[in-house]
Image 1 (tube, rainbow, N blue to C red):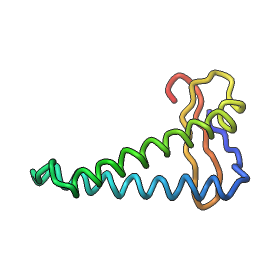
Image 2 (cartoon, one colour):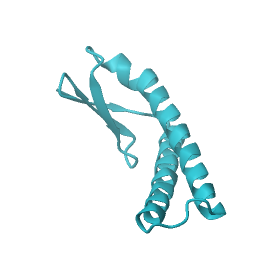
Image 3 (cartoon, rainbow, N blue to C red):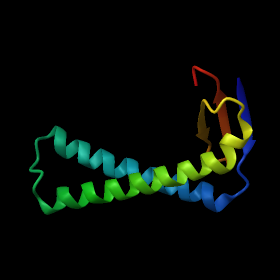
Length: 99
C-alpha cells in the first residue's frame, strides 16, 4: 500500500537534499579513485573519504529522525520504505512485508 504525507518543513527538506548531493558527490569521487587504482594513502583520497563518511553519517541521522517524526507515526506495521521528493516536500511511503 502506498501513502503520501507532506513534510511541511522546507529547511529540513533542503538540508536532506544538500546532504544527499554532498554525499553522492564524495561517493562518486572516492569510487572513481578506487576504480582507477589511485593511491589510497594520498592526502586527497583521505580527505574525500573523510568528507564522504561525515556527510553519509549526518544524512543517515537526519533520515532516521524524519522516519521517527513523520514516517513511523503514519504506518501500522513498521515495515516501510519511503522516499522524499525534494521539489514538493512529499514523502511517499510503501508499507508492508515487501517494502
